[in-house]
Image (cartoon, rainbow, N blue to C red; front, side, top):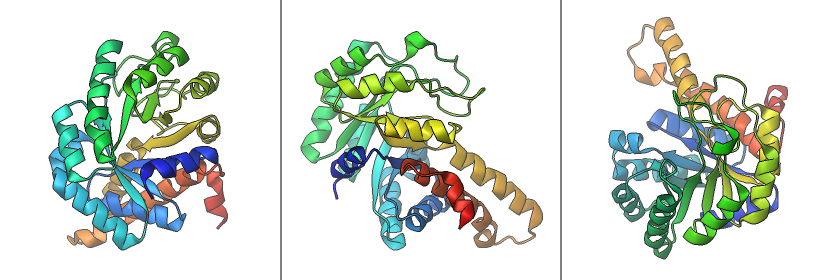
Length: 282
């Protein structure tokens, strides 16, 4: 199934696809096993930093081979690229979707760069994601109401660019939250009423379950999830390294992988509109 069809199906059913970043074969297998155990499809994301670490061709080969081996429907997405040249390389390498992030630029520049990438990607059947509004990254100032995505500007942006997916700023942030976030669901609903693009929630790590489910019910179709994956993996890996004397990494990594699998399973349930506590009842 093409990614666009999958997203359209999710939107009709008021559910979402979980988009998980992976960093190595261990995190890749961990998220894929979560998808298999919940009978979910997922989007596998690589950031520019991961591509520098693995290489574009290696990342594609790993993702495709592992998804086939595990038996999961998965699509490959380039996350937060700021370089059009990198976007082109990923399109050529067979990515299903790419993100050009010019959200730190002025509106007209964001439109121009996004439109350029759309023109490159659409003839190859590749979807394009962009970001509009201020979604703070780790260490940046907190967002104010005037930083958030306005429904009117979102409508204009989508019309001008033809972008397929739009990451919106509704009180979310990348990385860890300093205080509990409060998503502006009314703003999200107003955006949904004005745009046809699939709406994306970035910064899902740390968002309370009830707000996560409400965002999906209100129009979010793709949820980006990364920070908690890294944090969970590293916390359990440190514990295993202290506890074990083995130098066999095939014994040291599995506890961290299993912890990530359980974490991601709970988030996949939220994307399906279910209570993540259902996992503890099994």
